Structures are given as C-alpha cells and as structure tokens.
Length: 354
Image 1 (tube, rainbow, N blue to C red):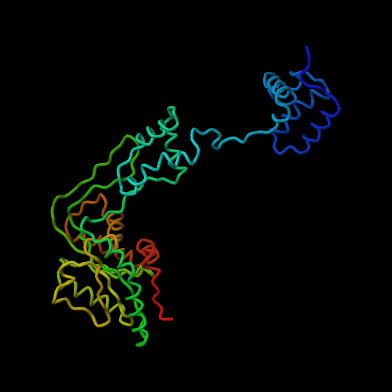
Image 2: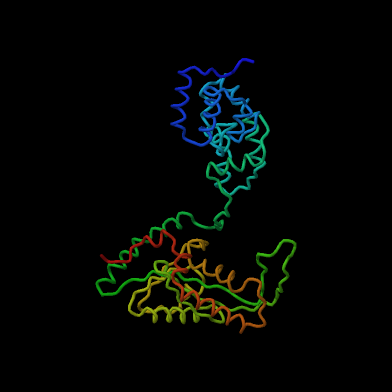
C-alpha cells in the first residue's frame, strides 16, 4: 500500500522546523503524527500508542496531510463564534425596526425578533440564537423609567440645570461665611395595610404570609443630601402644613451653621400659606408629576423591602418602632444612602464657593 507521507529530506526538515515553532500542544502532536511516519515509517497503531490517539485519528491526520499539507497544523481555537448566519451589519439591520419600539417601552418578544431573523437568514434558528444576538448587540431586559402622562418634559430638563441657581446661592452664602447644603425632601406613608413581596424560597414551596387590610398609617418625613448621604427624618402622625413646619424646623436646627436649599414636590402642604420656613432655608420645587427626579423617593422602596416586606404588625405602635429603627439605621449609614440617592446630575453640582 502506497504511503500517504513522503519522507524526503526537505519535507522532514520542514516538519522539524515547524515542530520547534509549535504554539500549542495540539499543534505539536499533529506535527509529530506526520513527522514520525516520515522519519521512522511507524505504523498507525504505533503512532497512536505514542500520542495517546486512536488509530482512526492517525489515519484521518495522514489523509488530511496528503490533501491539505501544512494547513492541518493550524488548530482552530475552541469556543467562540465560528459559524454565523448573518454578519454583524446584517444583524443590526434585523434589529433596526425594533429599536424605536424598544426605546418607547414597547413589549417586544423574542419570537418576533426570531421571525425577522429567520426571514433574513433564510433558515430556521433556535431561540437561543436570538438571545445570543441580543447579548452581542448590548440589548438587555430592563424595567422602563415611569413618567406621568401629564409630566412636562421641558420643565424636568430645566430642573436639571438648577446648578445656576445653586451656584448663585453658594456665592451669596459664602459672603456670609456659610456653606450651602442641597437637600431633597419627601414623605412616605407606612401602615398596617400589608403587601406581599417576592422572596427566596426552596423549589416546591410557596411561603404564606399574613396581610392586614386595615387602613391606618404613619408618615415618615425625610430630607437627604445626595452629595454626602446625610439623612434627616421624623415620624409624624399626619401630613399638613403644621407637621411640615415641624420637620423643616428640625432640619434647620440640625444644620444651623449651613444654608439649606430644600428641593421638594408641589404637594399642597408644601405650598400652604401658613407653612413656616426657617431663616437658614430656601425652598425649591420640582416640576409637577415628576417623582422620578426626587432621589428621596428611593428611600421608601429600600425601607419597605428591608423592614416591612411580608411583616404583619399588631398596631401602629409596632409600625412606628420598625419605621423609626429603619430610618435610624439609614441615618447612621450615609455611604449606603449616598449610593441610593447620588444621581449624577445632582452630585455634579459644585457646592464650593471657590
């Protein structure tokens, strides 16, 4: 039987040189498979025993050498994307019709994108192919940012330019030797009316928690400084101009050596004529229907998740104790508070006069 490998001197020399330059163990073994046959004339069974291969693999390698030559030594890396139905540019064209719907919060489904992909590729593909496509192009599944239908987008954009007002106040207060503290204020309602929340549980089990339907509430008043995470809070039985005045007085007293710029929404008790504002404080108001601009809103979700989720309270006194303890823990952890409320458009506002 005629050998598929010619053991002439130039071939042997070329293989020996290639063996010295092998970049991987797999490439090294492939060269050995051919070189041993060319120099020693060993049988496929002997070569297989030396390399730890099967005899069939040796035969395949020798056959490929006869057809492809040194190209068989180019070992393709494992993993990665070696096959593609569409180029990256074509994939972008498939996704293009869905971009506008996605940006508007439209409920896209992978099945829709899969159908568009199949039409473009001209062949069926698995659902996993579409998931990998979305991952390659940086798509992710997120919860849209809510916006009230009556919200004034222009007014919201203008508020983010409040650095001019803050800057003017900083310079003015610097003349009097006082620093400016920028704070955002909000109220949260907590009571006996429970709402079950998602929680971890072993497979096959579903926790059961109590839920009271009694509508009795307390109110947490809080003001947060996104720049450093300082939090001031009070728990009061209701919300009106009187309790709001009490809270503002408390904040003003806690920061007696500073001038407080207090940003809040336009609730009725915030605009009341009988609201008492401390002398070291100035109120600024958010545009209507724009809770997403107030970082203090994030405090309530964290409190409800950590302190109130799936708990049943006997009475409002128990609610008050839990709420007070939760707020106190936040006040003692400014780093955590800052991480929740430090919106970049706020913390980028400079509060130094120089």
